[in-house]
Length: 319
Image 1 (tube, rainbow, N blue to C red):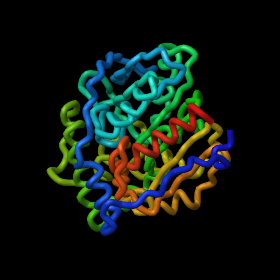
Image 2 (cartoon, one colour; image 1 turned 180 degrees about the horizontal axis):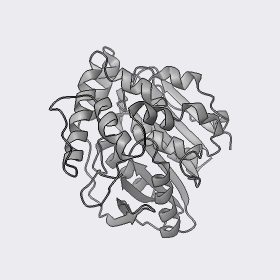
Image 3 (tube, rainbow, N blue to C red; image 1 turned 90 degrees about the vertical axis):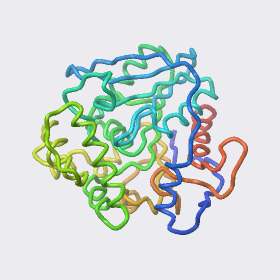
Image 4 (cartoon, one colour; image 1 turned 180 degrees about the vertical axis):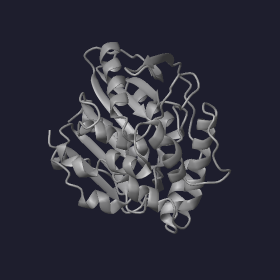
């Protein structure tokens, strides 16, 4: 299926606040409450080939479709966008798997950390899904850093067994440019937030002294790179950026980003060599996983991102 030849028939997105849009969208998308999951999920500890573990939460609806959802940097299965995506899948009667990456929870043992090159971890989750939900189509949704993880799996640089469909939301394609954008202007606030979240995760498990304040690049230099076999932060960024390899994607993949994302450079999307298997949507506004719409509707409120995902899921189910 050549996705760039398909029409998703998306209604236009208009930002709820047409000023300072990248930041207002990012902040509003995060602070406006999302519903909690009331459904009962089962728990699964998945042991990876290297002995580290991932914590999965799943619901088996005996559906021919399985939706696995992967969180962004500093997140977990409890993130608001994870819960909302699960609800969208549940409304279709699909099997749902919410993935907690290495170190995202203390319930799973992990000696190494997650990062943008962990395509094999997503591959292991998909392998488990294929056994647990035999015969079902595998749909993987990756937000932000997990979008990078899935892209690295899709181009088969890290891992080989891909999902049947993939959805990528606001993924950094060049990690060095994302790290640089985080150090500029108001984006320094996001950078500090990431630093503090990651510092807390690390110091729960490691005797590593980190400064009271810092940058995400400091974590990548002192911890992520060293812990995972890279020379330094720059080496990690170069090895795990998916941008040079995107033309190798064969899996039907839907990609969403925004021109005003504060720390994902839209020019990387425009200059990438996307194959026919990819359907790319670039919104003029939306921030980083914000997409708060001026026009509310009965199903999705003002969250155009949920509307986008629901439209994609419908296209997958009814091509």
